[in-house]
Image (cartoon, rainbow, N blue to C red; front, side, top):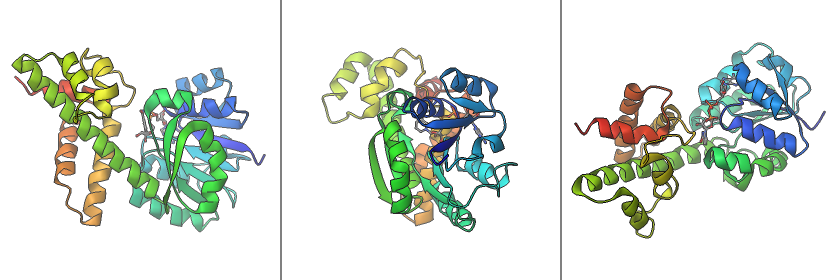
Length: 292
Ligand code: NAD
């Protein structure tokens, strides 16, 4: 029973992450409110339950891969069968990209019940969730981080202890700010270049051996942006949330971050226009709509 894990959130990332744990021999009970997600986990060999409370029964560790920190707080403090029902000594690992200040507050509330929270958000996308090579940034007490490490090693290829509770979430939001800024810049540059007569594929090849190279020029432009497939597997709504988190953090810290504010505002506008079903690489389509 000490090795029993409850996994909440079997979405694009959670499903492959939970599946890896099952394949590594852990006993994992998964919950997601979306029946198709539970069916997919059961088909992958996991045990899926339709009630959150049934997942936590007998679980020493809870792993959360939910949309945001609000969903995490709701699950842990307001959901029947979970809130107030976690055994003292339970370890909760929030792998969602949550907001760091909220994580710090939530950890203090849970500590009063003897429950330890650590934050362990990930980067790398669906592909690296499938092959277990995610980058994982972990905030929290060293002892709790050590307890989670064997699980994290199944899901991640590089694991970094970033410091106290919330520091992983801060790192993750700041990473995604840099990532989104790089993608936005690359999409703008390709659109301007194409208008002037440059070939976007050639531009990408040149960027990739020049100083404009970034993760988007390397892995997003050719498969998702240039053919306008916009199917990376990471939603625009979630990236817009991460940008808001990073910008909120800059303001919370009183640190000037004017570009962060501009990128966050642009992506909020894109979300309002393209809706919650859009992929984050569709920021390119949003820029295109503004060309007319
Ligand atoms: P997703 O929308 O595909 O999955 C989220 C899942 O959580 C959904 O299946 C939803 O039904 C479920 N859910 C919502 N409330 C729940 C609850 N109370 N209990 C259990 N399940 C619940 O999102 P995703 O792409 O898997 O992203 C999850 C998190 O990981 C987000 O914070 C995101 O920002 C982050 N992230 C995503 C990627 C990516 O490439 N997709 C990469 C790194 C980090």
